[in-house]
Image (cartoon, rainbow, N blue to C red; front, top):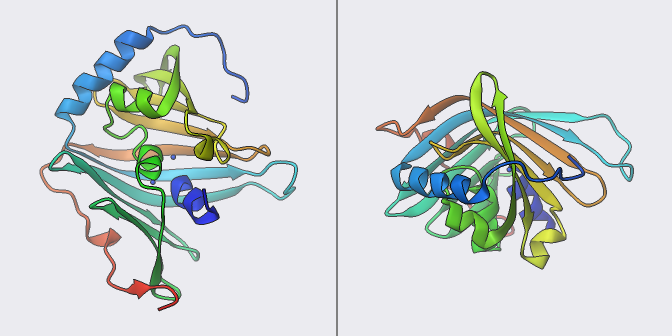
Length: 220
């Protein structure tokens, strides 16, 4: 997977895995049921990037907004990062674009279903879809910010994804199918932690305007 794919997947999402404590079959069934009811999620996110020993620099943070919704059964989403290095990622109709407002152009990101599987991870996907792309370990229930969540650890089945992601840990609301927290572990020791807040679930209208852009591909 190209560097741009890794960056996009980082937007979109413990170094040792404890012995499973949850009921994986029951958890996947609950995600299947939640996926059937899922229409959309909108949220704010705060991410912390911890760099491995190969890049000994202080942790970096990033804030932004995300939406994920189903359109005719297919996922569509936007990711907007805020601040001086703002970026927008947009996925619709099977096409992923990463927009840079400073140079007012976008890069198409290749990867198809592999990218989709990463960027929609923990946002409305079914248990069957999750298990198709990931080896899932159920680490059992926990309480996060007063909410009962299931802690799942996932390792990618695809070799090209494994070259960029060793595993992902999710704290997910099984009855609604979205994650409150996600930790992504990359080879080399890089760790990305995302916490989602101000979550709006299945609202009648999704405000996609902040994620829209009209521009040409970079280099053209």
